Length: 180
Length: 194
Image 1: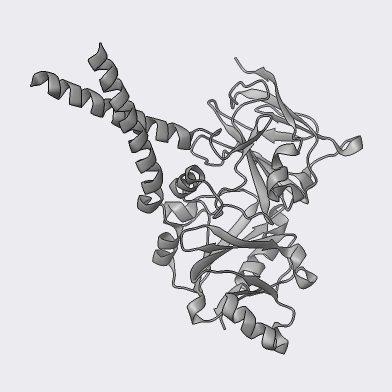
Image 2: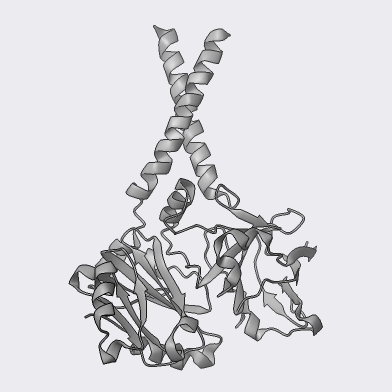
């Protein structure tokens, strides 16, 4: 009887260890890596449309039927990133994720001048550089300060109904993600 | 000798099954560590941020999702009605009550794998607030049902369990601590198809 109790106790200790090991190893060994999936699909600074139609099941998943999303990869080592689109849509928002998919910066159209998409993603050093003197062309840009090197930008656009589809498509056609 | 072997195997089985099982349960259930519950609705305020606890981190990496930022919105998921019964696709539900201030919201139905459900014909199992009829006083009232309904109807079809996903876009409640203090609509079951 005592032996059984001993075994159960040992087993429970083991279970706790296994539980913790799984928990901490899972993020490292997870194969569902959005960055890697996007790297297979397109080079850096190129927008990939997420959602239906992607060969990669991870990129094909839709989170919300009313939102169209696109993502681009960047590396701030190559200089700051400028995100622009000429078209105006009912709602847009974007998030900056680090290499591991953690959300490090996010904002929406209410923070932008005239609700137009024109944003700069910078690190601390680049922000200092900007403060010294903003070029005329970047004066109206929204500045997103992050502490990442490599990362991803995901932009989400609300499509209230099908009649907006053409305008939203034009927004994505005009979407640029470029290193300055 | 044999006794020792049985002892070791027994301990190992408890450790592996118990450890893996509890980890799976903690990550798979909608209500879990790091979640905030408001009635039937469950949200993970820190999911996908660097503030997330190890459970949320493991969960978001397992889903491989890039979660919404605070300025973008809050995602609330309900897997049960307000009485605690699991949501079923063959049932009719009334969703009624107050919503926190939000620029707009969307509601859609998903299956257990988080795949968006579709209803027959041209109907989507989805609604957004700019598409709704609003009664006096601006209280939200919607019906989720496999049968056509007057006013605000979200069509569903088929049988089996489902989850309702409510996304509040650009809402001040997303700023951390206040999530738990808001009131959200009640989901009440009206009836079910036999």
